[in-house]
Image (cartoon, rainbow, N blue to C red; front, side, top):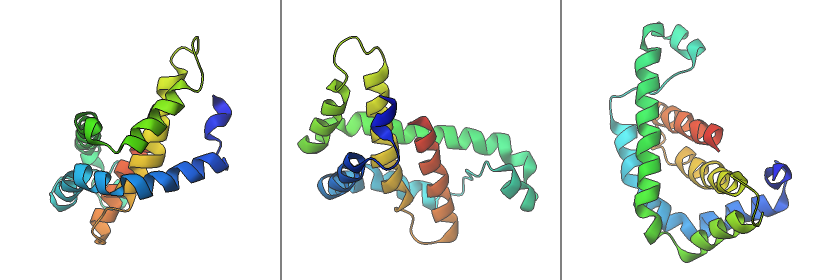
Length: 151
C-alpha cells in the first residue's frame, strides 16, 4: 500500500486526469456552491503562524483553526451526501482502489480510498476553484492542503 501513492506513479497521474474529465461537472455541482460560500465569506482560515505574525493577527490562530475544521467538515459532509450522484466511473475507481488489497488488509483499503479522494480528486478541484482574487485563492489553497494532509 505504501508504494501505491508514490508521487511519480503513472497510474495516479492518469487517474487524476481521468477523474477531472469524468467528474468535473459533478465536482462543480456538488462543491461549487460551498467553494463560493467559503470564498465570499468574511471568515478567515489562515493558520500559518508566519502569515498570521506578518499580519499582526497571531491571536486569531485558534479561531481560524476552528473555522478550517468546520470548512473541512462541510466539504466532507457534502462528499458523503452527494456520493450517490457521483459519476459511475468515479465510484468504480474508488471501489477498485478499495478492493486492490483484498481481504486481510485491515484499514489500509479505506485509507487508500480516502487518500485518492482527498489528495487527488477534491484537493485539486478546490485548489483551482477560487475566483482569482488573492484571498480566495489563499483560502482554497489552505483547504486543499488540509485535505492533502488528511489523505
